[in-house]
Image 1 (cartoon, rainbow, N blue to C red):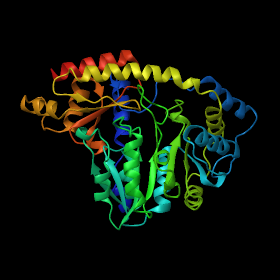
Image 2 (cartoon, rainbow, N blue to C red; image 1 turned 45 degrees about the vertical axis):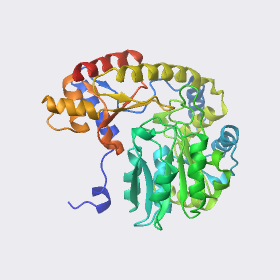
Image 3 (cartoon, rainbow, N blue to C red; image 1 turned 90 degrees about the horizontal axis):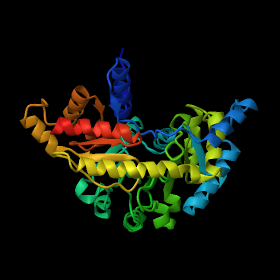
Image 4 (cartoon, rainbow, N blue to C red; image 1 turned 180 degrees about the horizontal axis):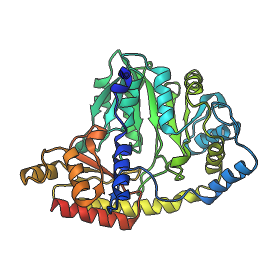
Length: 397
């Protein structure tokens, strides 16, 4: 059977693949600790579940408008005004089946064959592959640990060509937890103002998962005059522990949003009706439900950063947001290769070594465009983290 060129050009999501492998080993009886999935270990708050149950009982189980229910779209509009100081109309909002579909719709609606999309690395695993499915060209810009994993204005300016159509900004970042300051975003904005034909995709999925005293800003907070040049991508998965409910949303120019809606109308149609009711309850209800998660994430973050920086060959920066630690393991990989504990000096070999010998599943940095690193999610219990990092320390000692 001959498969399509587009599917041959992409790979399975590495984070989902590693999570599935860890689950299989656990089902076979091994004491595997999976630190791969970006999924809060908290339950969805009760008032959100109650809204969904009420919707089921009332029979709200039919098709909705493709772009989302009027109630949820209003809640999203109010959220953008309340949290970000940005105004949108209903025809500028599209609700999708998770944040991943929002970005997929965007690329299908906006990218033509050969168009370039600037993606700072380390990047969320799906950005380049979704661009490839749209027959675009991902232009990967390396933003290493020495610059805090953040794109500089000089790098952005150098990466833009006449074929550039889209720039992706993700803050707080998956996988690094890096957060752009207002000043850094202003500097990027000054570059982008010179290129009005370049669209900016601001992926703000981890907006409410902030660590320490870090403040969240997006590109429109820094440069409001980029409004017509920007699409904001967000969702309820992370802040409200609603990963399985699959609700993401996008806000931007009405013409682009309508084009994305047309794409969605020929793929999934509307997001699940019940999930939309739950998402509306999340956005309009009390935001106090986020606080216990943030308290736990801050405690866990402090623990994992301190622990990793005490382990031989590892280096880990303090993150500003999200619930990931992105660990520089290049020195550890060299040492393990010299000692003959791994067959080749790669992060893939390190990941296999940790899973095979210590039953700890991490995601190799190469999945995020950063060879020699690995990512863990600390959206799991402190007990799991203490056990897992103890095993990693043992493996690298």
